[in-house]
Length: 167
Figure (tube, rainbow, N blue to C red):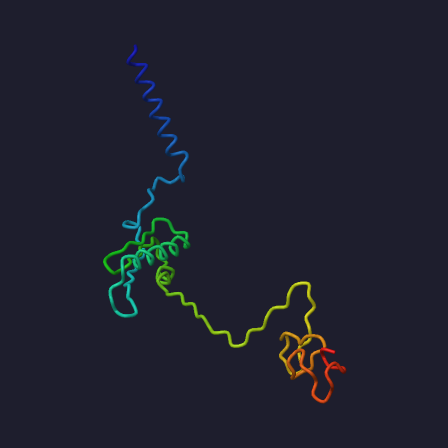
């Protein structure tokens, strides 16, 4: 009698596990296929340096991290980025090859020189009008200054202190 009780308990647990597996899944009896069975895209990127020398291991690891971040940004599960010699091999499941090919595009940042800097107006301070002929937004002359003369200089033809900027 004791053995029958253990057999009934075992069968109850087996039926419970069976129901748990098939009633809580995605309601399909099909397994989720990996990239080897479902198919996908494989892109091989060859690392090159500007001088033609082989890339360092650190440079390849950094490139692998950047490409992995881009692949993760696609939201695809089951993808991998591995280093194979001087190559980065990207494997992405699915049939959308355009996104996988764009992963290796080089981003470029161009730094251009500043030819004419215009300082920003301070907050809460009214912007002063600049001298005649100055571009809009250029800093203004100090109050009482005469255009063409350094601040505090005497006006030619007038005695010092007689109506000049400092007087």
